Length: 303
Image (tube, rainbow, N blue to C red; front, side, top):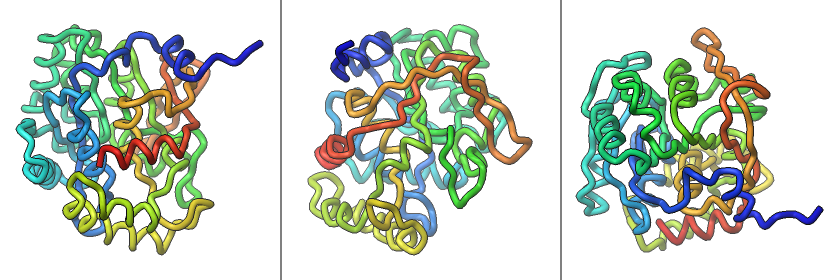
């Protein structure tokens, strides 16, 4: 049997969610520039803000990489640096807090006002989305698609079981379950996939001469790169995994990734992250492979 071209296969398997980019909400926990905090959300926001084919209708913030106060402030800082007029909406302060916030209200109203048009790039814990979905039974089905960085199928960090260090999905397992089971199309950008690309010193040199926010990003990425060079040696060199950027790149060009239809169920590890059971449950797309060359080419085109 002849192999189908990758782009055709991607559209065949997931025809509804990503045909045309449409309107986008980025739900995020940026901490770029704070000491010993990850920088990937900041990089992901920069890529999204510098992608004209994405109509970013709002940024919603969530706890995770830092407190809600800090992530909200950082998102506003990034918007100011980018000279963007996109509004930032403050979200939940902690896991399991499904009371209405400006972020959950904005997600709900956007989905109901523009049913089938809103794609959410969810690159933090999923509490804001779960809150919006719980507030009105029509919200989940009105969202076009969710592209979420989170979960681990086999990948381990520091030798621990998959999911133990899952800051996004594992922070609020119930919210993760609610979102996955409620929306029409769900894409899992897993830890396994994210560990296929490494941001090294060579990539940093490219970042320094990037056309968009080069000074701001290079200044704030350098300490995190230096810290990670002490701990992570991979076949691609020393550096950090650019986790959340993969979710934005996926929306920009799904053909960079190899589709992987999967059925999953979420299990709470009682405060120790989550366990993902495969083979039953909700159908999602969980790509495990990508074209590194195409990924980095698009990354540096937009940053």
